[in-house]
Image 1 (cartoon, rainbow, N blue to C red):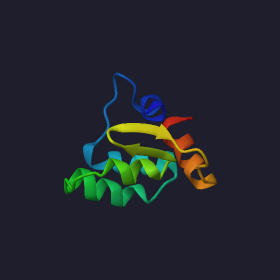
Image 2 (cartoon, rainbow, N blue to C red):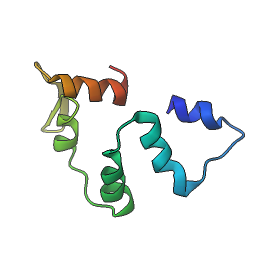
Image 3 (cartoon, rainbow, N blue to C red):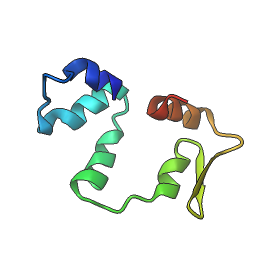
Length: 84
């Protein structure tokens, strides 16, 4: 979000049809393309449990908790996603 803010700021808007590509470029995660296609463009139901597991967060009974032993990939993605 901060990178997008740096690029555009309050006085410059982005082109809607280019936003997802810019987010992918900024994050360096090309796999986001399928996420945007499935869950934003096609409006498939997003399963929080499966999605949060990718960043080492457990989601059960409406409660999110950090996993005790996340993998290096989970930690890397969490860092990129929420900077933690």
